[in-house]
Structures are given as structure tokens and as C-alpha cells.
Length: 397
Image (tube, rainbow, N blue to C red; front, side):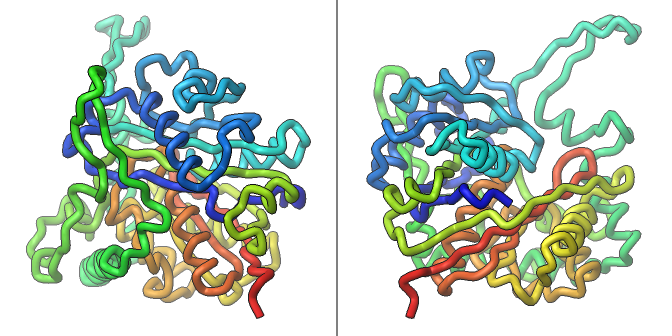
């Protein structure tokens, strides 16, 4: 896809994703925090911040001083470089990575930073002049009104899950099974200490420099039993509080570079991470959970690869029903994917969600010796997005 672009191994990191209103992240300007956090991540990875030539940021929720965009965030990072903002609902994290690769491929920059972030806590309320409305103005609570109303269909995102579950005749037992299994994958990974490779703890300070708190876990995530899932009330067909994700706050970052710079900046230059392909697809109105499966099918058709070729499969699954539908459409065992957990469990800050998923997927591929990595997910507007990366360990005997 982009033969000149690479993701240098180890030049990445993510915050933990505390659930909305549960941590000190609710108190900060998320753009400022993200810039400062990226500086810390790159320092920990021994990447001189001066190496960065351009910055692609991605977020979906308005934050104070957003008009000033990537240059403002870069100033908070401590390196005055140009850049721009990219946004596509929950697809933002993956789109930002792909766009950074296009910057490298086109020769505009040789080292591009990707920095995605969002704070769902205390999301802003906007007042919009609307001359066609009888009130002449309309207000919008950015997170909750958008989740609750698709202006193209009039339906909430929750409704898409219920409609899709009925279309594919998904039963409640399978959805509960998926959620229980995803929680087990996450907690097994957490207890092994594996997350320490990619997730970075951060101290949150107030404007006087006093400590507000430390973000060193995905606050709000707890173990959940099968009996607890069984007892939960259905909000729509097969959908309960335990089989959907939750709003969260956080950031995630990585670098995209040319081949030579990847070798120079990577902590393990023998590992080569290439871009193989990417596609998007829009399905019928209010059937968002099926879109990722069709995007994957389209991408596999274009690349000539199959699910059997994939060493790592990982997705953004705001509803467990997404995974059930993917299993049916692709004739794929959903037990084989999301081995280190997924956004169904650790939360949904939108902008950085797929960035963290990509980081986890690439780290998993390296841990098993390489191979093709499939990452996919859904986004508002009944969109599915999918991408394939190839991880090669040149030092493997």
C-alpha cells in the first residue's frame, strides 16, 4: 500500500483509558495533556522529539483551543512543528495512522507523529443557530446527543446493535459468551504484566503543579461473572450494559517513518512493520455492527489474503454483537481474535481507540514472531474500516 512507509517498532505508547468521570483526566485540557504525554512516551522510547517533522492529531470531541489544532498540541509536546487535525468518529485512530503513512509515502515528511486523544468526561454543550428550527437555536451535548441520534436515520447507536442482532438472528447466550470471554482475555493479559510494554502511567497535575491523581489502570473495568451477565436487563435485542463498551478518556501515539528512519529510531530495527492495505465500506442505514465484516471481506478480496493468513486479528467492538456478526459473515471463530482484550472491555474514548488497538495488535504480532495483522472496526454513519499490516522479524532464526 505504502512501500516506503514503516512503523518503527517500539515508538508507540498509550495511556490507560479510565472510564468517563472516574479520574483526574476529567479535569484537564485533553489536547495539552496529549502533547505533554507524547513527549513523555517518546522520551521513554528513547526517540529524540526533534526527529519529528510533522504531526497528525485526531480527536472527535471539541476541546478548548481546538482551533489552534496540531501546532498548539505540538507546542505542548515541546517541539514546534506543523501538522493538522483528522477526525472520523471511532475510525479516527486508524485513519490518522494511514494518513501519516501517506505523508511519508508522498515524500512530504520522513518522520510523522500520530497523536490521537479524546475526553468524553464533561463533553461540551454547543448552541447552534438553526434558522429552520422553530426555536431558531439548537443545543447539542456533544457525546451523548451524537450517540443517541443519527441525523441520517433518527436512530441511536444502540439501535443499530439491536437491528443487526435481529437481522443475523444472534441470540443472547452467544453475546453474553463473547463479553465474558473478552473480559477473561483482558484480565489474563493484565495479570501477566503484558500491558506494561505499551501502556504508560501518567501523573495528572493541576495548574499549580499539584498532583490531582495518577492514571495507571483502565479505571472502571472490573471482572464480570457469567451469572452477572445473565441477570442484566436487555436494552435492545441481545444488548445489555455488560455487552457494550463505555465512554472513557485517553490518548495513544505512534510514529510513521521512512525505511531508513525506522531502522534508526526503532528499539529493535530487525522488526519491519509494513502497510499492506486499507479499505472502508458503508452499509445500510442503522446496521453499523455488520459494516466491519464487509470491510474486511472487501479488503481480503483486494489483497488476495484470507483469514487463515492472519496471525493477529483485533477489532474495535463497541458491542459484543459486532463479534458475533463478524464470526457469521466471515465463518470465523471469534475466540481466536482480541487475544489481549478489546475496546468492548477497556473502553471507548473514540479518537485513540483504534490507535491503541493497532499498538496492541502489532505488539502481539511481534511477541509471536510476526505475520499479517488485521485491524478493523465500525464508525458512526454505518461505516466499517479495516487495515492489514505485515510484521517481519528479520532476526528470527
